[in-house]
Image (tube, rainbow, N blue to C red; front, side):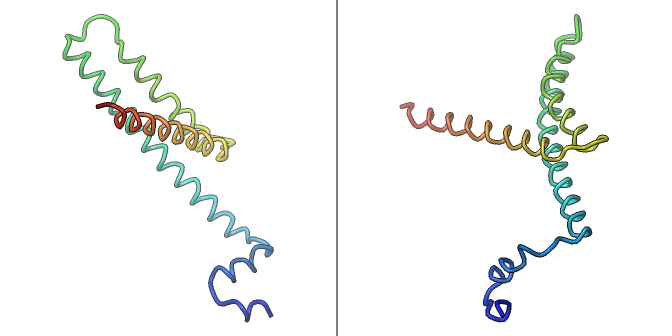
Length: 124
């Protein structure tokens, strides 16, 4: 009878919470979640690749002599994205861990941005 009394979509959704989820729906949700995480990883890796290319350009413009120092920038900026990409796409993928790491990095970035904006407001 509660179904007939429902007036909004939210009322119907509340009634469906205890129903079993089909395997097809669960698989579709997993594929969507994995796709979203892949896009976030590509977005993060894009910034790392850009920074790495700038460093390689500076190394080349400086004469490309001596040791290839941009390798340190490449390793430190791309290593987290490569690790998470392997954990997401490799054998035994762990979506929850990748999602938690991406969320933690996002929250650290938000905190840094917030501190910077507070400093700017405090400066005369």
